[in-house]
Structure formats: C-alpha cells, structure tokens
Amino acid sequence: MKKRMLSLLLVLCLLLSALPMTALAGEAKLYGTVPIYIGYVDLDYMAEQILQEIGVSGSTDRERILAVYNWIIRNCRRTGTADKQYFDMDEVLEKSSGTFLDRMEQDFMDGKLTFRIDVAGNMGTNDGFLPCDSNDYVAWSAYQMMLYRVGQCNHFAGLLTVLLGHLGYDCRLIDGEFINNDGSRVEHKWNMVLLDGKYYWLDVRMDHAKYENTGKLEHSYFLIEDNTQWEKKHSWDHSYSDAMMECAQMMVESYGLMLEIPGAVQDAFDELMPWSKCSPWAEAFLQTAVDKELYPDILLRADMTQAISREEFAAVAVRYYEALSGKEAKLDKKAANPFTDVTAQQEDILIAYQMGFVNGMGDGTFAPKGTLTRAQAVTMLGRVAELVQTGAVADGAALKKGEKQVSFSDGAAIDSWAVHYVNYFVSHGVIEGMGNGAFAPRANMTREQALKVAVAALEQ
Image (cartoon, rainbow, N blue to C red; front, side):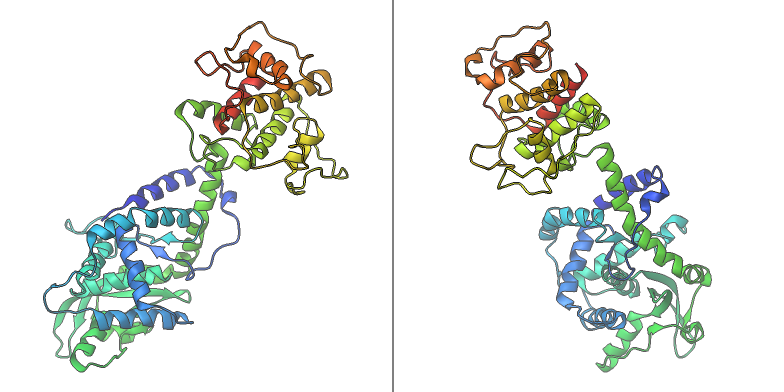
C-alpha cells in the first residue's frame, strides 16, 4: 500500500508552523460534507470504487451510514476461505498512481477532501503492535476485507472506518471484549462514529452475526449513544473512548481547520514560488522577479517553459514600468477600449496600450492569447524604458546605449521598429543571441525567458 499523500501532509505540517494564524481565517467548511481519506492511495481508490457499488444516496446522515453498514453485513463474511479477489491489484496500482492520485492531491489542496486525524498513532505501540485505532492498523484491516470480503471483527471494523471516512464521518476503532449470553468473553473490535457533535457506538460484526444466523437485517448495535446499554455486551478500557468523546466537538473543529490548511499553504507557496514548472537555470531569475514584484498574477501556477502570450507579456511590461519608474501604472477608465477581443477586466492590456507599450493587430483586435516573438517582447520592454527615460515612446533611438557591441548573423531580419530597442538592451548586456551568432527575432519567447529579460533590464 502506498502512502505518497502522507509525505505531502508532512510538508504541509512543517510549512504550517511558519504560517501566521490569520492565514487560516476564512469560512470553515462543514464537517460531514467532505471526504476523510486514510492516505494510502490504493486503499482510498478501492474505497471509492466500493462506495460507487453501494450507491450511497441517503438524504440524512443516519441513512448514509446505514447504507454502508448494511452493505458490509450483506457482502462480507466471517467464515470461509478467501477464494475470490475483488480487485485486480495491477489495475488498482496503475489507476491509483495515475489520474486518481493527481485528482486526490488537487482535491486536497482545494479543500475538497482531508485526511483522518491519527490520534492513536501518536501514542506509540503496545508490545510492538500497532495501536488499534491508528491509521496504519485501520488501513491494514480494511485492505484485507476490501480484497477478499472475508475476515475477523477487526477487518469488519476497519472497512467500516474507511468507508464512513470517505462519506465525511470520523470513525474510530475500539479494542475490547464481547460478552456472550453465557457470560464468556471473546476478544473483539468495534467502532464509534462522530455525528452531531458526539460519538455513537457501532458493531457491524455482531449485527452481521445475526444476519448470518437469521438472514434478516437487524440493527441492535447501530448508532447506540447509551454507554450503559453498550456495556451490557462490550467490555473495554474506557480511557481512549472517553477521551475521544470528551473532545468530540474539538474533532469537528479540527477537521474544519484541516480543510483550510491546504489553501493557506498553497497561498504561501504561491507567494514564494508562484510557478508550477520552470527550467533549472530560470529559477533564480523567477525568484528575483517575485522579489522585485515583476511577476504578474496572470502567471500564477503557470508552466514557465511554455511560450508567453501577448496578454501575459503586457502584464510583465506594466510590472516592469512600475518597478523601473517607482510609479503606479493607472488605467484611464474613461478612454475607449480599442480592441474587440479585450474585456474591461483585462486591465494590463489596456494600461499597456494607453501607455504606448503595445499595439494591436491592425484589425481592431489584440489577440491576447497569441504568442510573442523575441523582437516584439524586447520592443515592449524597450518602450517602457524609453517612456521612463525620455517621457515619451518613439522608436527607441533616444535611449541611452551602453558600451557593449554585438552584431548578429541575422541582424538584417530584425524589423526596423525593433532595431533600436534590441541594440539598447544588447549594449547593456541585458540580452544575448541564441548561442549560434543569431538573434532569432521571430522565434517565440518563453515565459521564463521573458522574466529573465525583465529582471536583467531592471538590474542593469
């Protein structure tokens, strides 16, 4: 069984310690509406498949829990051999490590699922054995029942714990003894589930025993609240269960907090490293772009190795202007929108146009999603520098050149409107050729290349 998600949880816990508590403020999600996973990817995948088979459709908590409870009674056995395997493990491993894992990780970060709070697992082991209610013990017990649907009381209780968790209910596994009618006792395990701010008792194995004997569904041990009634047939060390009952409301609140943590951590990641992918050489430049506020929101979680769009670079140009001039770039909202394919919400394009950094396509459009050539990108940034240096945008001839001189083998291919801007940045060592003596003015510029040029231009 794989536990890849648990490594993510560890990272989140470490990062959480560095977050201000105000980062967790926000509307709390309701307990009982978001799945609680164990964290073993293959186990959680199989749990989802079983719940689809059950087809839980009850409108109340009791109906939903009862649907799972009855399915276990009808479909699992206490005796017999494990002569059938209900899941092809090669298929499970393949599917759980592919799109399912990707969705699981994204849902976790989006607050659409959380993970079971392992209380018992933090208590250590008992004589070398896993604590009964630890996530590891629960997963091991449920795994056996999921695969073969035959097992002991711990397998029944483990499966119920996992499935009810996937429905959004915190379910605990309790170790003790069952008291037979003749007063004899047998080692036994059962459950308690958190509902309406308190824990209720469940014993699916013993209701299953009645079903085996009579063929009728009975619910003598389903959602029992009265401890005195429960003690007539169950004996156990009350310390763990009493502690859980006392902190029931705290558990509800803890799950709500856990649902908020991933979003807060993602926000922290976005502030520190807002891209999803970049080349190794580009990371330092991108981090500098973030530090100098050159990194625009439109590139949040973007793959920086891909070509930059005209809209994205317009946003970079606006950030470059603000960093270079120390002034805020403001939109004149009274001015008419000249582009038929740009909305009022795409303010960076309109600001860049009003300030003279960008032009349209000549047909009333801007083509926001269109790619940008190296010559066009350099020209946009050059116009920003020109506005800051001279107070107006012209053709770049008035820009103060540096001492460095470079000639390109394809210099004749650089359009006249870009020549002065290219020469300006080349003379200051901001941009170079492609390593083969050429500038490649018509080649696309990637997002990370664009931010590198903006950073270098700002630092010249």
